[in-house]
Length: 391
Image 1 (tube, rainbow, N blue to C red):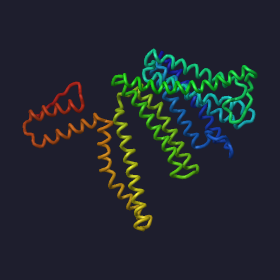
Image 2: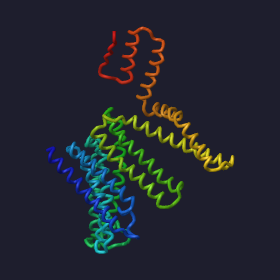
Image 3: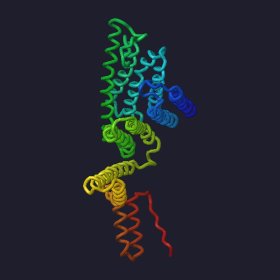
């Protein structure tokens, strides 16, 4: 069973990576000055291969280590779908295969639709309850309707221009398939919303271990929201151009690539990583970065516009001021964030600090030992505590 799962999982991974890399290598060897947008020959294409590779790799690991859990196979299927879609873009280079490339456009939404099942089944691989079976069936019907509708509609729905479908049906039958594809998109959107609600429902009723697993996915979702915000702000700050576009694409692609990684950690080894600590550190350094960037920009404007100092002097002064503020700001912000998002760390630090203060005036060894044992139990919650003292 394990050997079969190993070969099945890593065979899918090999095919996915080979298809994605073929597209990347081809477009780098045959660059076109006016090639289709989004091809894998650009820096965004390298990021797309990394995005596909994250889904494929995590899917292969979960499929190998947890073959009974369908999440790994769904992630692997998502990676394979996006790899085929990326290879379909390469087919746009050749006039004889452009129709096939446009016809394969349905596979992008198909790969995204598999993510609906990941959300519904995460992290245990089963639905939260029988009440969610209609949502799962609706997602399956939506995916099937999307594929069939695109396959046999009279025109290729996903093409940028009206393109006849070589295998499409004409007349009333073709219009029915076109309607099926349109309705399936709405059905998939509704089931995606239901899948997100299922996570909230599962979190409310979950125990501590499952809540820790769900927090990893929520953490990845929060980073995606920050990446979307950065994608809006970067062009306004840096202006238009390829540099701003490439940076924004890198941030959003990297954020989405964290989703399968977070899922893999949650399903496989979540106990080895403290998600509350990761969240608190991310929030703390994001706040610190924003505060210091504001201080830096304010000092530069003050020095150059008000005090009329030269730009090098203003930049140097602002840099020194930001560096001097980093340590005290970090301690203050980290303490505030830990108090809200990492309560266990905050309580442990408070308990340890109180013990250190009491230790300065303590002289009774037995009292110190009992106090130390109490502090360790409160801060670390070990299974047992032993204290050795040297005579």
